[in-house]
Each structure stands twice: as structure tokens, then as C-alpha cells.
Image 1 (cartoon, rainbow, N blue to C red):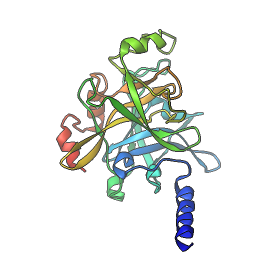
Image 2: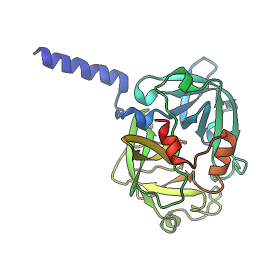
Image 3: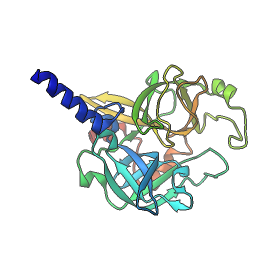
Length: 264
């Protein structure tokens, strides 16, 4: 009876801490961030995601920097691990080719006032998979929150550019359709809930010398990636128009995968 009661109390504790969210190994989500805005009443609203890349650098979507005329001022790390901590924004910059009327190059870098790793060792930066397609894994993982604020890790199938074009003929915001040069498409029609926030991470996990390390391959740009045959579109991080910009702005080298794995 005592064992059952203890198990029940543990379940209650986990539900209070994680809700309906999945729980993850720390290495999978120690870089996941939420992008927020302080409201006039002091409440902080989070509705975008981002990725911690090291030092004081957060990568997110350009469309995540402003809401109703207010600029983002808070980044929260650790929510997916059950131990959230907030960091103040110092500055930010958007991709030089980003135009608000289009979905292309929807990328931004946020500079925090502090280096999260110096505040707590539980925050680890993600690596970026810098090699061109194909991705070494048949499937990639989408990490992030659904509309109810619960975290999910969802396996997605990559959809080749020609197939993706069948779903995304040129529109006002996708003037050239789903271009492989800047974008990736992925889906899982068999899952009802997955990450819905802009900037959510598409990643793979590479293993070396007993270490398992997340490598970002894309971030969410448009549409759902689950519960529909229509694939979602992601910004492809390894493209020639994106990775050199990230490296230059962040002042980091993402081409040396072994050096990044060594951080873990």
C-alpha cells in the first residue's frame, strides 16, 4: 500500500512539473529556448521557440522578435527539463535577406546579457549539422511545444523538394515555392500533436565516444508537420545563405563537428 501511495505521489509531482509534456534526456533539450515579451501587466508571454548556440547566442525566427509593437525582451531556457530560468535580451539582428512579406530567410540571432552556461552547467549549446543533404538519419526529430504548451519530440519524414513543390505552388509569401536551397520539408501524418511554435528545432542526434549530441538541421518556418499529408517547411541551416551568416554573426565555427561534440 505504501509503495502504491509513493508511486501515486510521484506521478502527481511529475504531472505538476511537466503536465502532459513528454520527458526527455537532458542532452536532447538543454538548448531549447522560449522567446518572450513582457506585457504591460508584467506577465511574460511566450509563443516562439529558439536554440541556444553557446556563449550568449540564441537562434530563432525573424518573425519572433516583435509582437504588437513590443520587442522580445526575455529568453527562457530549461522549461523542457522542468527547471526554467529567464535571461534578459541585450540585442538582436535578423538575416540580411529577410523580408517580412516573404517566409524565406526567416532567421534571427538574439544576444543575451549573460552566458547561460556560466549561470548553470545544465544548459548546453546545440551543434549545427553543417553538411549538405542528405541527412545521415532517415528521420529527424522535431522538438517543441504544441498549442497547449506541452513539449513533444516527434519523428518526421523528410520530403524531397520536388514532392514538396506539389503542395506549395508559388504564393504571395512563398514567391518561389519550397526552394531546396533555403528550405526543408518534413511531415508525420500519423501523429496528432507536435511542436507548433515558430523557431522549433528540427534536429538529429549523433553519437561519438559514448556521447549523444543534438545537431540542428532546421527550424520551423511555416505550417504543421503532423496530422496532415501537407509537409511543414523549415529553414535549412546548412545552406550557403544561412550557415555563413550564423557563423559570422555568432562568431563561431560550426563546421568542426568533433569540436562541438567535445563540449558535451
